[in-house]
Amino acid sequence: MEQHTLFLEGAMARNPLVRLAAAADCDLIDGEHIALVGPNAAGKSLLVDLLTGKYPLRQGSLTYDFRPSATSTAYDNIKYIAFRDTYGAADGNYYYQQRWNQTDHDDVPLVSELIGKATNPDWEQKLFDLFDLRPLLDKKIILLSSGELRKFQLVKALLTAPRILIMDNPFIGLDASTRQLLGDLMQRLSEMQSLQIVLVLSMLDDIPEFITHVIPVEGKQVGQKLTREAYLQQFFATDPVRQAHDQELFATLHQRIVSLPYTHTNFTGDEVVRLQKVSIRYGERTILSNLDWLVRRGEKWALSGQNGSGKSTLLSLVCADNPQSYACDISLFGRKRGTGESIWEIKQHIGYVSPEMHRAYLKNLPTVEIVASGLHDTIGLYKRPSSDEQEACLWWMEIFGIDHLRDVPFLQLSSGEQRLALLARAFVKDPELLILDEPLHGLDTYNRRRVKRIIEAFCHRRDKTLIMVTHYDRELPSTIDHRLSLTRH
Image 1 (cartoon, one colour):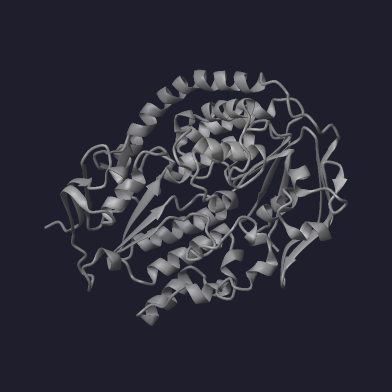
Image 2: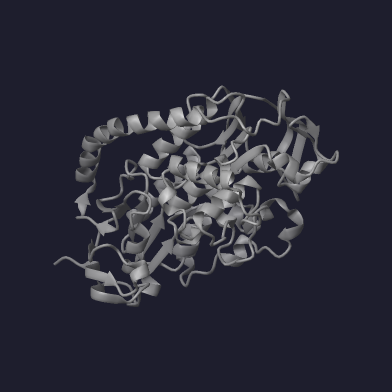
């Protein structure tokens, strides 16, 4: 007889603010590993909230059968990892740039202080060996790379021996070797008895092989559960039609962007970034060592390297966010750092988005005001935009397909919608230097294609300079003409 580990039938949340568009049915049978897939804002997170019993039901039922677990509560048996780029989820005092300010690391806990203990020492030793976690135990949590942070969060959750492990977009932000490692680890976890894995995925075409079934979610409605093979067959049969349909829209977007008037061309020098023998260290850990780098106006750079190789640290120097830049030989837009220029004089030339920025952006303002904050490089809006600036904000929101969200509070958006809003914020002042650190993080298949075309169109504008980080070569625009690859020290 089948064991229904989790059974949701005709369920609808009591609170209308967290309600799906229709009553939801979802069945997780013992031995199955599930992927919840759907576009941005489809309702995947709302479904997870229902499955975990986060909100009381207006109608329907939710039942669990966690055998052979010793306890019967969802709290003990279901663990949910959102995999946002947080550096200590318990620390509500995290702020943008904290990672680069070594003087603010004193009160940051070590991995060993946050990891927790397993009731079974043998299980703890097995997990530490499986994930090679011991070298991380003495590190400050805020200094972990994206890949190291994933391993920490996974082990922390698994130490409690859950019956069901739910992971939200676990592969985003990871280099190829770390993605392979994490995939192998999850494959091995899927083979363990009494552990079922549920992945929440926005990349509709990237379903790991250990997944047995897929539940599509779209328009805030939960679809019928399919086998992995049936879902992929369906997706690849319909995707070419969607791509052909999108080409006309993307061509229109391209033309609109390249035809924009040039209103912010106040930098006419040849050198945008010059680093000479730059080294960055935190304690005994070397991040960058004797790095020389010259970026000229109009060049399009791809910045690559393994997790922990220093890519985000390097960008923090260019964006004037890292205090160590004053001790280094760095020139930005023809001016040497520390010769009297202000941070804001540097930032006026730059449009920037990164996982750190997304993590720290906790302002619950209307989305149009979040976009407008990019005009003045602030976290939050402290100066009312003019009518022309307001028009520019709405223009870029339309380009990114989020103009209908102009009045929605930022923190009520899905993670993918938030990323699109922060991208519009980066583009809104038509910057001379565009710095994109993992810009397609968490975006669904369609929005990844759309944003890639927007970036390509922007790169066709006169004298625009691009520095872009991604761990997927297919996400890079065709305009890339230079590459810098960092190695981990």
